[in-house]
Length: 378
Image (tube, rainbow, N blue to C red; front, side, top):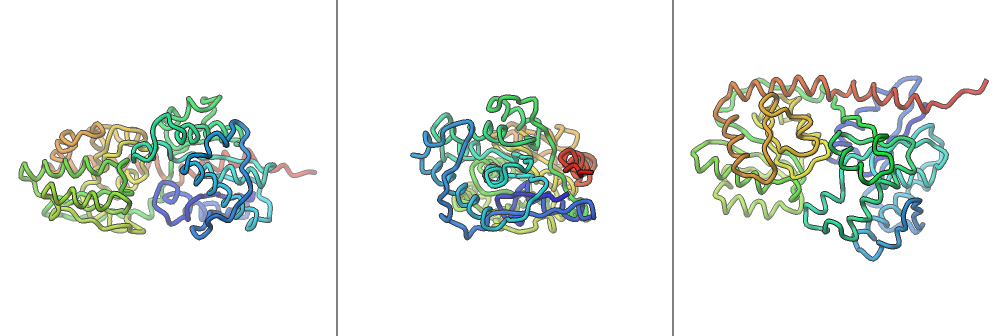
């Protein structure tokens, strides 16, 4: 069976897709399966000129927005690149981004399409202050869910909470499937260690949606109470300068290390103690599963896929979003009690290995893919 995994970003980019899809190939490497990946290189800009075709709404109603216009141009570029680079047929295409799925269906209308929605671009834009809820851009982006439902043979997402989020925007929400991201536990090797000072780590894109302003405020409260710690912030983004200035203003800059973008944070994550990310929204939150497999104690917000991964007080701690004091109290618990921290980390690791293993995700995908296997004519 010839499969194509259609991505948007290159597979080395951070995020839930890159945590799973590149590692599928070796699991599908056999005489029965042939899998390839495809994505839009960053260098491809303003090459496409073919107007998109949407079946469920009129895109021209939204094109006056610069954000929508850029999105549509990116779609045209992906369409142009697909027509240029792919000639041979596939038995099944599994897309991991709306633009990829729409372009693939336009080029290969007869090939079955599975579409996984990994995150919400519109929620990220709203939380990052780029668009207004209910505005032109928001209405365009949520219209894409019904379009994806129309063109897909199977519509999937990565958490039950995100399925609930998508449900008002499609005709048959009950048909949305959920397959969690899977993680190759061979990549994660917990390291026994004793840090004299508790080491906190977060890994994310530095944007308002990730709530790092809340984290810095919580850490300032920890320092005010006399707790020692070091906060390691791995990632880059438009908020970096603002966050560095905030750390200075809160007098925690000496306790905070900004690393910038790092390609494989899982290689040194096991040497830390506590993973914390107070996101304002999260479709799944792959980095929590990665931290759990690295045997770190987890502290997150009670939103989206984070709340599905963490059972408060059992395999991590959950706090409300945008609540620095609650986050500070949770961090205080795991900083002050190493044994409690260890128990949370151990339980989190056990759950991640059981529920978010790559093997489990691969088995679910194989069962689904086989339903679309071409019938051999006798």
